Image 1: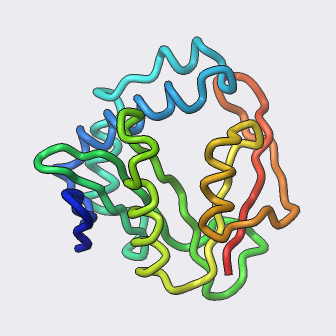
Image 2: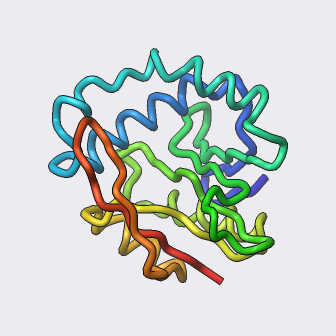
Length: 171
């Protein structure tokens, strides 16, 4: 567990599922506005995602996947999930950050930085992640933390639209 100013970074539990789902949906709706089709974003529902998060946090896809939450008092401000890489060309020992999202009201206040540093400290391994090419804010954040595009791209269908994703690597 990491504490910084009044924010605590700790492992998530199934009890955090509803709060994580809320942050996940709000973050998507704000960060991907103008990138992901508006109809898809407006259809996101935290209540519908809560059981999925609860199940994942209870069992995990496997025991190597971790989810951390950033919390201030009782409020979950954000989360990050990471584990074994899913890419066919992954290198032995690599880890992949699957998601890192914050409540939009906390953007620019160092909470994402604290989450990222916690992931980096815990993994102590080369990291990869995928980011939407059009998400300049996230790409800038990742570059500030030592990630660089490694030349691999893919199309991901979101809301019926193909969106370009870029893989970033650190280490």
